[in-house]
Image 1 (tube, helix red, strand yellow):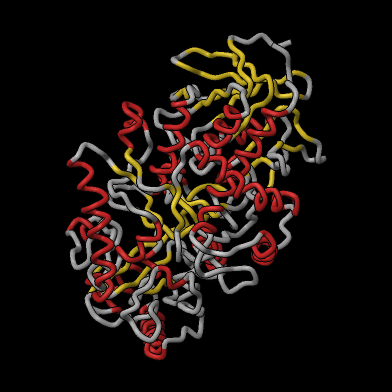
Image 2 (cartoon, one colour; image 1 turned 135 degrees about the vertical axis):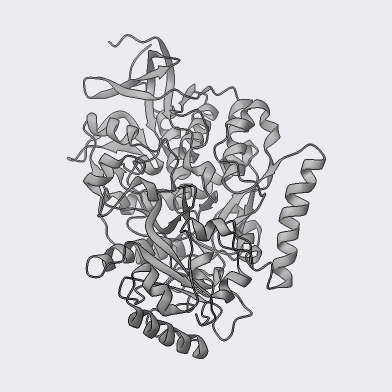
Length: 555
């Protein structure tokens, strides 16, 4: 029998959305959880994200008058994911679809406030079972000062209290009345005005993770920051606890009923990425949090866990800011008057498509034609009308040019020379793209055909709101890298979030959720929040299962 310094019912490794949902599920089942975070900040990559949950047939969308069904959602998942092996088995898909709505109801019962992201389309809305109106929900704008001193410990506080479904309109604040009014509401009414009355409203991932921390603290759930797990403790074939490093000391914590690994994947672990991922790859391109170093995945490997989907990630076109930080691109590549090219000057993707698809396409193209980096080519219409990251429309700070973030030129041929792209190829692409824009049909990649493409578009541009000629100088180029939101592969789990061995047997006492586990979404991304939605659902499933079963060990 192992000797422990302390014993709880369930040890939960990580403080992201999967971990905190598991902790709340354990606590509400009458058991004692302990939450461990390796870094000095709370919330993991979830706190840095848009904070959306893709949960089909959820109660928030039903209350908003939107019809959905388990059968429709299953048809959609079966169509877009296909057969990718046990990570997305029929049993796991069914568990996600059935218990996702239940998880939302559970959290609302504890005080979580959600809003429906109406209009944020599924990523393949034209596929059977898909919907252009969307299935995502997210945290309501929330006063983070309710956390008291813990507010300063939330990772990546975002200075604007926005919802994801408002971002498309905000990008058009210089173009449409709706865009201007949305931006004025978000910046003025929702962000600045609360500051004047002593509040600090947050949205996106800050709201999601802030609300869950507030509920956890109200229920006296212990959350240890700067307390990395060192290893799992086993007795025979069962996991019975962890070794954690806290304040310079190693502490052995027993887990009567299980350990939940929910500390992210390995996006910031260069050695693992070089081993498992396509090349070239570097941790410089990822948008995942700095603590996403593979500790939990490696701990599972050490006790015999099977792996799946390790060569994949939540890919997405990304740029590197002058500060050296990666920035995930959404609207910038989707809005009119821009396209992405490889070294030959040719396009190779629908620039408005799902970011995971875009990442796959960039790697596939690079196998035959240099496409890492690729280049987003935009003209002065784009720069005048739309924001680019923190650069406001019509304002291109000198440092963005001088740092090399933007390459600027008065002609496409000059721009091609500066960035090392074939000038004749770039000129041909621009001419062909201009004709597509004039007619409103992208004959090569069908950009603008899908309702998802049009989530980030400009309705003032006709006849296709995603297509606008790249024709007005000066021209700009930005390097595009195959970045990511985190890794997608990890420990293989069953429909109860239990970690499995290669022979299909279960490792007693060990659970995993979120990016520590191989994704139920397989190699695709069905809709906004397809990382967090399953993470929270399987955190809920695993937490409840651990709390309900008999103890792994006595004491």
